[in-house]
Image 1 (cartoon, one colour):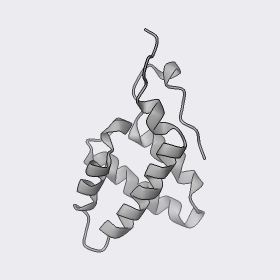
Image 2 (cartoon, one colour):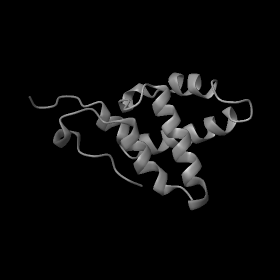
Image 3 (tube, helix red, strand yellow):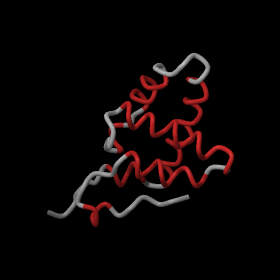
Image 4 (cartoon, helix red, strand yellow):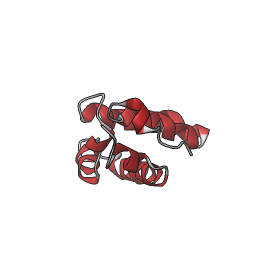
Length: 102
């Protein structure tokens, strides 16, 4: 599992694409290409180069509802895995810095 980058060294918001590219290698090889394409589709849905915090359960659900009929269930399962990765890997905490030094 790839840990979230140190936000203090970035001086800019974490991007959804950064988290996607850290998540995909943790998947089985057979799933990587499709998962990456799907999640990058979510990034495009959110405007492209979206900040990580633009992805919420509600925006993920809204995106899944835009997919062709057979894909929403698969997309929801992938989003569940991705959200677990974000939470367990510290990505969500890193994206919401509190008490950062000026």
